[in-house]
Amino acid sequence: MIYDNVLQLIGNTPIVKLNYLPDPYGAQVFIKLEGLNPGGSMKDRTALYIISQAEAAGQLKPGGTIVESSSGNLAIGLALVARQKGYKLICVVDPKISLVNLSIIQAYGAETVMVDQADEYGNYLRARLDKVQELVKQLGAFWPNQYNNPSNPEAHRQTTALEIYEAFGNELQWAVIPAGTCGLITGCSLGLKEHIPHIKIMAVDAAGSVTFGKPPGVRHQIGIGSAIVPGNVRRELYDEITHVSDAEAFSTTRRLVKEEGLLVGGSAGAAVFAALKLARRLPGGDKVLAILPDRGDRYYNTIFSDEWLEQIGIELGKSAVKI
Ligand SMILES: Cc1ncc(COP(=O)(O)O)c(C=O)c1O
Image (cartoon, rainbow, N blue to C red; front, side):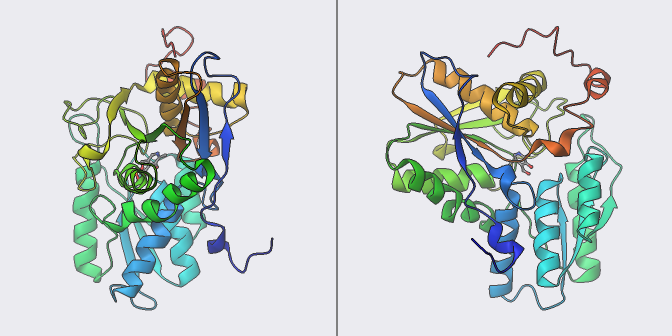
């Protein structure tokens, strides 16, 4: 297959069965590898769709500027799409961003602005959003506003969910989906429930996130969890909600590469941790799909670094993490 440009490579990611981690007496577990998008995550889909919609609505004019707050993956997706379409991108980031991500964003040619004021739990979201407002006003720029923009879930309703339906037909009982801005989970829930009425959705949140009404706490997972309740959250669409700790997410991420050959990110580890637990209580004939948002090479200096884990107080060998 020969493609005309890199943007045509976005979407149509593969689905693979897990062969070693699941309990042989439980449901089968499959994963959708969103890290195989050209920018390395499912946010390429969101970026492409949001920019296309903004163009259609006249919010983005040729040569215009885009300003967004992102933990990394949307920034990378936007950087890729913006550059290809001739827009300037300014990303507001914070000190929790992986150095690898920062370098990737800059390699695509985007500008970065770093905020430094954390709240009492070490989260920077509010500071980032304030900075975005300031820049948008100052530059007359377009703000994708991923937390509240309906185009964020819509991108996944139209593409990710459809691809899953095309792969499984009606033969899928559960989809396990990590929640950050809730674009991925809300879009997939809407699309999947349209096509597969009996499907159940499990939302995977980070311990310490406030999205589903729990008190805020310290967390080191990136992309998953939130310090504010996202506008795109649609609680009524999610059949179960589970909170995964940093240790559970990171230990599963490490097991995925060693045991299944899948080098994926921390939210992928969280999703698989939740999917494996779920699969154990389901009958053998059932199928569970976990969506794995990004690939693991972004996390060499964090999740795959023993020193980093030690710094944040996680001892994987000693922690009683059981799937
Ligand atoms: C690695 C990773 N996992 C999960 C998510 C959550 O996706 P969403 O923001 O669509 O809820 C993100 C979002 O940036 C992410 O970067």
